Amino acid sequence: MRTTERRATTRELTQTLGLIVIKPSRGWISLKLRDMWEYRELLYFLIWRDVKVRYKQTVLGAAWAILQPFLTMVVFSIFFGRLAGVPSDGIPYPVFAFTALLPWQLFAYALTESGNSLVANQQLITKVYFPRLVIPISAVLAGLVDFGIAFVVLLGMMFYYGIVPTAAALTLPLFLLLAIATALAVGLWLSALNVQYRDVRYTIPFLTQFWLFATPIAYSSSLVPERWRVLYGLNPMAGVVEGFRWALLGKSGGVGRLVIVSALVVSVLLFGGLVYFRRMEKTFADVV
Image 1: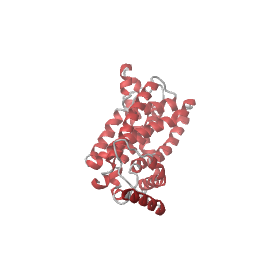
Image 2: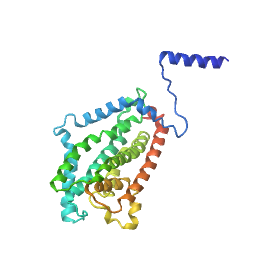
Image 3: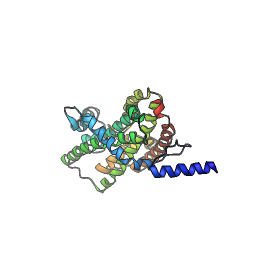
Image 4: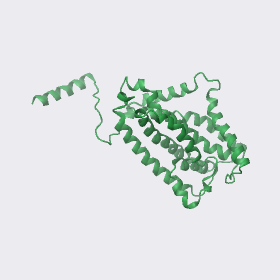
């Protein structure tokens, strides 16, 4: 009876004072995604902070969002398009490459920032409680600002070359969502591992560089033999890049199967990353 009365008294006191009791999660599958909505304002301010910090005290400012993919496109156009003669499926090579570089730059930035996000925010993690999932998500979403700026340049290039988008362009948000989900899925694994093993941060640049050439950016996935096309879709960014080209440039040819395989891989990676991240979350403040 005393135990029951004590619990009732504690519950009434908590409701009266408006206290929030924080308990550690139990089991492997305890995602608590509802907390993300309750802390949506914190997510917004972290995104805004990341955007401001990136361009603070810079000479060119937001122009870097255009220069990075544009200069990479120029290099690819010279060496792959002109010198190596890599086919671009009948599409002007500069547009062909720049269309692929936009989702790739978003993915590469989001992957790097989210993978290092927990360690970079260790002072915040050790001082106050909030869903730690907010940190890698804010790092991923901050890259959308650069994507939006560079996308305007892509539209200008398409107008210059006389390329008119078809109704397939309405599916572009789906491929953008797939790119964000891919970056978040891998970023959750890397950020949680980076807290435990600090040498993970040194593998991120190598992983990004290797992934760049494993993705059909400077070349078309049509160069991959048909029997290996589905297996090639195990690289989620292959489906994203080819999906962007199909939506904006009207390029077709086996894109559907590639995208389906990529989406399935991302779903598995994202769910596993969420579960692993939540499982390790209780140790972040002690280890970081």
